Image (cartoon, rainbow, N blue to C red; front, side):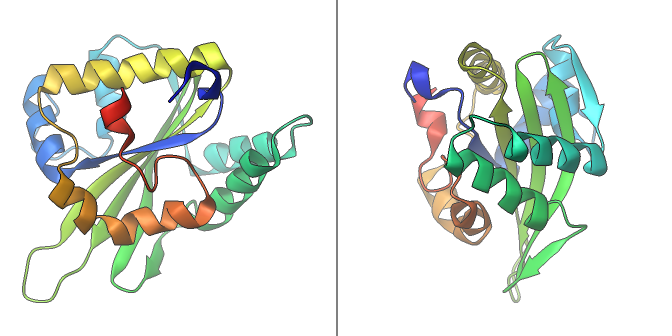
Length: 188
């Protein structure tokens, strides 16, 4: 991701394996409903938690902003309509809103995606949609995720996990957000 493109929304995915490892490093406990918020607290990041309605309202405001790139406006509309409904289900996949954090640099929205599999455990993936408020803010948010990755000392998505997450990633590919078809962790 080049420096001038940090002002555009992007998404990062993390596997359950990565999140299990993050529980130890961020003291998330056995069951954590909002791991993103706990990790931000652990890094000392100042944020305001947004509920589903506030997050939807924020995305709609972004979508109606003047001077915004059309793809970003369309992305915000698509996400507010589909991903922020109580639960999105399609073809054995569920993508649900978990939490959102409004920082000085941007809004980070956390989703939990699950893929149901017959006679095998359900696969779980976290998706963090980042909507930077400025190019500088996007660069700072990128550093936050880089710090999370370094602190956990584990790859957020292996090649195998990336392939298995395709049904969850497809939800974001359909909205046109960057990072849905490329593992952006490798560019951090």
